[in-house]
Structure formats: C-alpha cells, structure tokens
Amino acid sequence: MITDPEILKHLMQQGSLLPKEEMLEVARKKGNLFIGIPKETSFQERRVALVPETVSVLVANGHRVMVESNSGEGASFSDNDYSEAGAEICHGPDEIFKCDLIFKVAPPSEKEMQMMPGNQTLISALQISIQPKKVLQMLMEKRITAVAWDYIRDDSGVFPVVRTMGEIAGNTSMLVAGHLLSSFSNGKGIMLGGVAGVQPTEVVVIGAGTVGEYAARAAIGLGASVKVFDNSLSKLRRLQTALGSRVYTSVIQPKVLAKALMRCDVAIGALRAPLGRTPCVVTEDMVQQMKDGSVIVDVSIDQGGCFETSKVTNHDHPTYTKHGVIHYCVPNIASRVSRTASFALSNIFSPILVDMGSKGGCKGLIASNIGFRSGVYIYRGILTSEVLGKVFDLRYKDIDLLLMGMK
Image 1 (tube, one colour):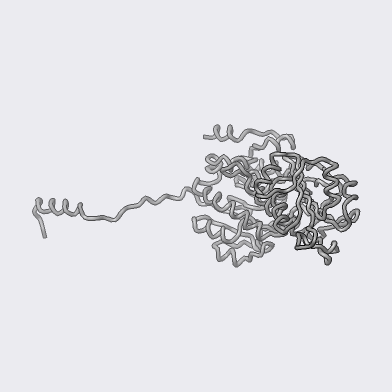
Image 2 (cartoon, one colour; image 1 turned 90 degrees about the horizontal axis):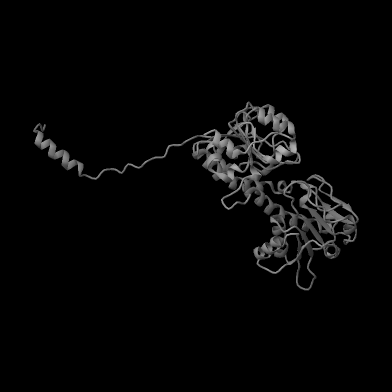
C-alpha cells in the first residue's frame, strides 16, 4: 500500500489525464399527460381521435392513454390494437371523462359534460351551428380549458384540420359521384372520366377552396372536363396554379353558371362561409334545367348547402331525387372514409401532444404556441371566443390578456 504523499499526488495527476466517459445531459420530462379517448356517440360519427400508432408514440414518451372499449370500431381498429400500443382499455365512459385531457372528435354532449369533474382540458371540434349554449355554460362552470381543433393554426397560418378534412371531402365527393352515375345506382350508366372516342364527363365545381381544389384534381385525374366557379379571383388563380393545368374558371354569374349546370353530369357544391350559412347560389330553376340522371354532391350542406333543392341526408339514406337529379347531401362526408380520416387527424395531433408534454401540459403549450392558442375558446372556465360570446350573448375576454394577467 502506497502511503508516500508525493507519490499519491503524482498518481492522482496521472489519473486525471486518462480518458473518461462523456456525461451527456438528459432532459427531464416536464409533464406526463393523462389522455382519455371516449367512444364517439354523435350520429354516424365513425372517426376516432387517435389511432393506435399515435398512442404508441405517446406512451413511449411517458404519457398515459386511456381508451374506451370499441372506440376505434368505426375506423376498423380493435381494442387489442390499442392495448398492444400501450393504452389502457376502459369499458365505460365514466373513467374516461375523469382524465386530465379528453380528446374526441365531436363536441361533448350534455350527458358527457355531467361526467366531467372539472379543471380539465377538452380538445374536440367546435360546431357553432349545433353547439348548445347550456354545454358552453357547463364548460365554464367546471373551469374547463376547451380547444377547438378546427381553429388551431400551423406554422404557416393554415388551419391543418380544416384543410385535411377538406382534402378528404373533395376527393371523396368525386368517388361518390362516380358511384351514383353507375347503372346499378339508378344513374345514367356513364363513367366518371373519359376514354378515347367517348365524350368525357362534364363536372361543375362551385367553390375554389380546398374542397373544390381536390374535387377538381380528382375529376381531372379521371379525365373529366371540369369547370370551377367562385366569387374570388385570387382563389381561382391559386387553384389554376395548384392544379398545374389550365382549367375553365369563372366568377359566379347566374347565367353562365346556369348554362354550365345545364350541360354537366356532376355538380359539386364546395362553397364555405366564414361564419353563418353558405350562400345559396343555385336556384331550383337551375336544377330543373339540369339533365335527368345527373348528380349533385353538396359538400356545403353542413352550412346549409349552396343548392336551393338541398336537404340534409345521412349515410344510411344518402340520396334522393328531385327534378330528375340525384342529390347527395350528407354533412359528415369524412366519416365515409373514417380510417383514412382518423389517420389524418392523428398525424396532425401527434406532434402537438408530444410538444404539449414537453411544455408541461396544455397551459404551457397555450402560452408558447400562438397557433394552438388560436383554437382556445374557453380558458380555465373563461370564455375567450368573441364569436361565441356574440352568438350566445355571453361575456368573453381576450386570451392574450388573460395569459398576461396569470403570469
């Protein structure tokens, strides 16, 4: 055993020069989320808020996810799929609605609200036209922080959920039209598109937004002749640029629109209103002049529809015939392709939820992410949406001022 102090000092100096393991800093998790996914109870809502693949990512990041049994049944996901992804399966809604963060597709019903103890976060769609005032008041009384996913913006200022669901609705509307034109759907027996030597199908798209763009894109891809109408010249220019081909476009002039509808085989209603009812630009007289067996798909029906002859239908009885024209007016067209729509929603919210966990929860993300903050309509029981405040005659406050006051 070495006892000489000089020798010990020398050995220690030599040892300090030896290579050592690098000590990397490990970031601590700021907050683990407890997410509840209830089964959708809204009429014919078959989408699910999170798919098993996204649940797996969240669980791997240390978060806890509870899924109500059969929640993914409408989108062809089994309880076993969620269980293998790390989710806890719950056989009733009572436990789900006690989670810290409730994530669902449709707005909560009054019955679902009664199951919530309070001081929680709710992320769902906000459907102003069917949102009852009583549910909003219950959210406020229970000091819920409510986020409307259709009002969340991304880094470029776009509403990602609205755009994605618009893309799905536009593509699906053309698939629906193609099905309704077939002989076995009591249609004219023509193919949507065109083949050599046969006149192509004529399609009129009313609206040059996301739905209109993707409806036109699908129709052109099939070989149809497409005409697009909108009152915004900037939207029409953007659509032509996005499609990469010259397509007939026009502002909505009644005589020009009536002539196009008279010749078309398919008419797609894709107009959107920023607030309130969609403008009704196609009169009943225009519909009467359309060819027998032609098809109308009114995607705008969830805001009242842009055809005077439109009336709401559902997935069980999706069509009716008026003036010899087949009408398809199902509001929730994305539920027709619920699995695709569920994956699309999960792709949007997977990084948002992971970021929320790293920020310590919903409050941290609201404070740091302006795009996410734009979706908040109730913050800790205080209404922050000017639109809802004016529609329901409720007091509201600016969320930026609230956040400043709570620092």
